[in-house]
Image 1: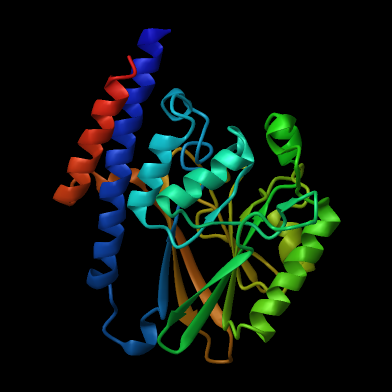
Image 2: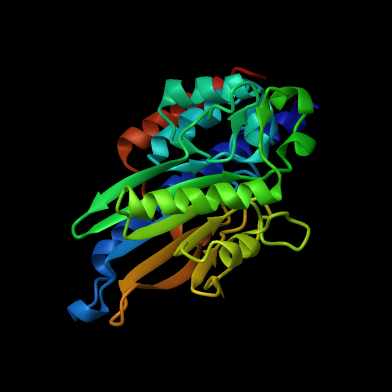
Length: 294
């Protein structure tokens, strides 16, 4: 058991080091791949990852050892704009999730997770980001199946809604983003899944709430290279376990609205990229702490 734990710890550090290198590769590509003609340039480039190790805060021995603490620090280093709350992010209890969020300033969002007593949201439903001539709204959704996936005691005080309620909450949140916040582009950052047994699935969400422009999905670990279209909505997903980094180029459509070019970038593209020294130092500290768990 001890050898098995050490193997997972060492592999996790190597994978994390690789993916951080990979992110810098992706950032570098933004400046090196700019087309000569302005009309061919994306107005926005989005990078994303799904189910970072199957789930964000738990799922492997090195994550569970300190109840998500080390993984929360890793996520903080990556500077995500937003993180959808997945089912296994509640494996140490919802209070622990919120504590890690606050301590490490993690951008967890979910519109359909609420306290049963008073129906109060436990985290932000959405965030907005402003760019030159473009305002983006990002709403979060968690799978309603969470209470049956994690230990029910971890979320006994919470409601995730049923599938119909989740769709209605998404519809109302999108309306608010459009009408009250003035969002030009609406992205749903979801932990719903795209497989037939997911209820609701990201495909259902796209069909029922067509005013969403882009769905960045997780939960089913689907690899959707190039994305899939459901009506006017693009759905993307980058699998799991850091095998790919997802990229979406956003273009202004001549007829109004937006067009998307999506692709998955294999982690092997990061092999020749050197991380920044401060990240290397931070990773060494994490590795030493993990070694101390032996």
